[in-house]
Amino acid sequence: MRFYSTNSPHTTVSTKQALFLSMPADKGLYMPTPLPFLGTDFFSTIAGQSLADIGFAISQALFGDEISKVDLEELTHRAFPFDTPVVDLEPGKTGVLELFHGPSLAFKDVGARYMAALMSYYSKHSDKEVNILVATSGDTGGAVAMGFHNIPGVRVSILYPGGRVSELQEKQLTTLGGNIQAFEVDGSFDDCQAIVKKAFVDSELNAHVSLSSANSINIFRLIPQGFYYVSAYGQVRQYGKQVVFSTPSGNFGNLSAGAMVQKMGLPIAHFVAATNLNHVVPTYLKTGNYTPKDSVATISNAMDVGSPSNFVRLAHLYGDDYDRFKTNVSGYFYDDDETRAGMKRIYDQYGYVACPHTAIGVLGLQAFLNQNQEDYMGVALATAHPSKFKPLVEEVLGLTVDVPERLAVLANRTKHSIQIPAQYEAFKESFLQTV
Ligand SMILES: *Cc1c(COP(=O)(O)O)cnc(C)c1O
Image (cartoon, rainbow, N blue to C red):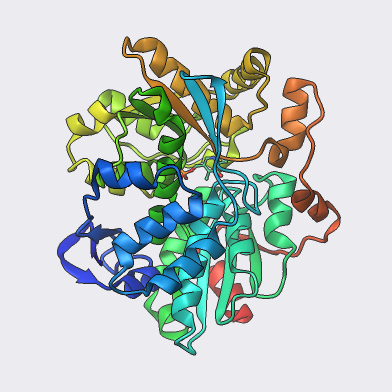
């Protein structure tokens, strides 16, 4: 498998280069080539398996001529010691795909852990230290921190918007120590993301340290996210209906992963792009105009992205053709009041406790199904466990949310972060002191 940049399709790099470089020098995004068409039969055969085995089968199809079968099997099983069950809301009509059964209780575990496993595979044969930079809107930080903790030869610096992540999200990324360092930025997620992007094109910095990104600009975050769309397909195909996925979106990595596996032959009829008030993509789908904006803070903080870095990739997957894009993807967005009302209704109707992001996914799915005659099976991606947003969920639903042990233990740990203003130079200075 080779990887080209969306900005220069004719030059390619190897798997290892795309993994460690993360972002091409021309500021495009890496895409796999050739993206194999595996076909419906392939997906039908593997769809009933565990997430680890689905991941293994697809990884073999993609990387089988570069990485041995034994190594691929080991790394996919190490990455995915959990599954992604579809829980019925209305059997045969709507369900939620629970992606939060990993260590950090959000879907980000899937991409982060696969990427970490692949990096540690390649790092075994190298003595160069890798510095991972990652900006987080809430959940990436925890998944990356846990996925990369204690991996030899890898140091991780996490940038997060101070005061804009939940307390438990913050604990996940500020309490591990060791090779994990958190930078608390006085600004928004977009500010964090802008600092990271600047670091990658800072030639002076790159001469000193070898930088990699664990954000979804790294294509190895997205490839494994395709695996759970396959798992979900396997769980709902018994209904014999066309499948629609609704993906609560911020940076649009998750939806891009779905579009990529669809292109590889997984039968997905349609996507719903569901967002909060950061709705540049739903607005694009409606008007054809794509206008990135400053992000606004909402209760679904992990989706507070005003300039989604995977939009380019997603548009590219639809041949940069607006009509194709909007034929396959419908956009919906909800403000905080609608999100709260949605959480409440989902609980009242189905007894299901959804985090605010998941609720937006369900709302988008229901809106789409209501507007279409076709008898689809709809699957909304449940992107985080409700306990990550415990105070909010308890206030909205008037109940007590149990916190799984692996999250509860963090409450008493001490936060360690380096506070910096939202300026690149400030970050660079304190980052260089840590390496
Ligand atoms: C990151 C995240 C999202 C958004 O996913 P993207 O791939 O950035 O679109 C949605 N919900 C939760 C809980 C998240 O952590």
